[in-house]
Structures are given as structure tokens and as C-alpha cells.
Image (cartoon, rainbow, N blue to C red; front, side):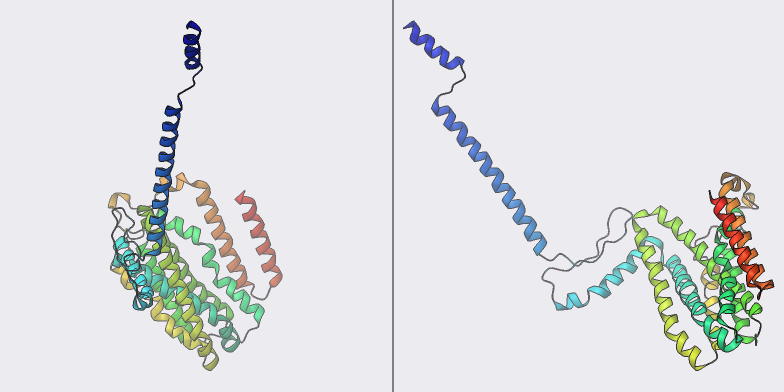
Length: 357
């Protein structure tokens, strides 16, 4: 008897359970696994249904600074909804642009990058070869040299940025400079259109001033919209798409009409179309659409602390500008001396490369 009791106690001490308890635990495990499988199946079917069903085609404002979300198709979208998707998306894009940056700033940026950097840059680049051959009657080598001289302002953009940041002209860091270069560029296009120019050197100088307007307006407007993009980083892609879309559209339009007009007429006629384009930025800039705040009287003059804060950047920008001006001066004064131009260009490139390190 004692042996039987000890045997029973030994069975429990070894952890063995009755068959009834083991079967109940197995049933609980099966029920839990079945519940999990059923939940996963329902979740997967819900995801498939959500993906297969069209969503609302609405313009919903978000709570953060990301503006408006893009359009989505309505429930049971039809052929009309698909056909109108592109114009509705464009409408939403401009609503988002205006909601985040304001219509005045959007108009200012649009004028600059459509009329100035888009159309003007496309026209000056497309008409130069025809102007060299039909009006100036110079060969390809001289035409390329004239293009190199006229492109000098694009190499001095760093110095332009330093000057505009360090010295507020007439109380403004950007607006006053844009107005000045717009007047200079408009006058240069008027002279190219009205004067009977036969000297490639004179034409190079005038093209220099036209590019000076384009490069300066591009730099200062770019700095301003980059500043606004930092304030609302989630909307940055909207402004960048807007800017480059206008540039490409302006370049396309310029390419479409420059060639036929230059072939049929004197290429000099095209510069008359450039005069109002060059002056187009004057009105929105004068009205303050750029959003450039006037500097207070106690902050007028050169901002020496800013220059001391970035001495190497400032120095390199000024040296690069000096080398670019030197290259243009050598090209103008030694227009036919290709050896001197090559020697100066190689020397300036080596100097800038060494200083960069």
C-alpha cells in the first residue's frame, strides 16, 4: 500500500499530467492559433479591398506645413475622372504653391524663371551662332570666343552673392540688385537690336551684360526661394518643380521660334523681343513681390562680421571672380591671339584648383 502511494507520488513528482488536462491545453492552443489565423486573414482581405477600391478625389488640407495633398480618384471613378486627372492635379499643384508661398512670390519667381532664365537664356544661346554668321560675319572660332566672354557672369555668381549678402544696396540685399541688373540687361538688348554692330568685341561686351542680368536674377531669386523652403521644408519639392518646369518650358518656346526667325530674317530682329522680357522682372520686384525686407538704418553698410565669419569662402569667391574677369579681359583685348588666351585659361584653372585644396 505504501508502495502504491509512493508510486502515485512519484508519478506527480516527475511532472506527468492526466490525459484530460493535456487534451484541454491542446484545444486551447488550437483555438488560439485559429484565432490568429482568422485575424491575419481578415487583415489581408481588408488591405486588398482598400487597394482595389478607388479613393476620394478631394483636396484635403493637412495640419502641418505641407499644404495640400494631391488629388485622388473618387469612388467609382469614370472616364471623365481619368480624363480630368491631369488638369485637376495641375490645379491642386498651384493651389499648394500659392497656399505655402503666396501668389505674389509665386508670380515673382514665375516671371524670373519663365521670362528671364527660360526665354532669355534660351534665346541668347540659340541666336548666337546665326548672329555671328549672318550679322557679324565671323567664323566659328571667334563665335566660340565671343560665347566664352559673354558667359563670364556665370563664373562670378559667388562674388555676386557675397556682395549682395554683405552690402544692402539702397537698404535691400536682393531687390535693388535685381532692379539694377534688369535696367542694364534691358539696355544691352536694346543696343543689340538697334545698333548696326560689326565688331565682335562690342557684341561680346553687350552679351556679357545680358548674361549678367540673367545670372544675377537667377542667383538672388534662388537664394530667396531657398530661404522660404527652409521655413517649410515639406513644400520644397513644389517650388523646385515649379522653377524647373518654367525654365524648361521657356527654353522649349525659345527653341521653337528662334530658329525659323533667324533663318527667315536678320537675327538682330530677335533682340527686340528680348527687351520686354529683360524688363519683365522690374515691376514685380519694384512692388515688393520678392519679399525682400528693408534693412534698418543701424544695419546699413558692409556687414564685416559676416565676411569675417566665412573668410575662405569669401576669398575664394573673389579670386574666382577676378580670374573670370581676367579671362574676359584677355579675350576682349587679345581677340585674335589664341595662344595668350590658352595660356591664361590654363594658368587660372591651375591656380583655382590649387586654392580649392
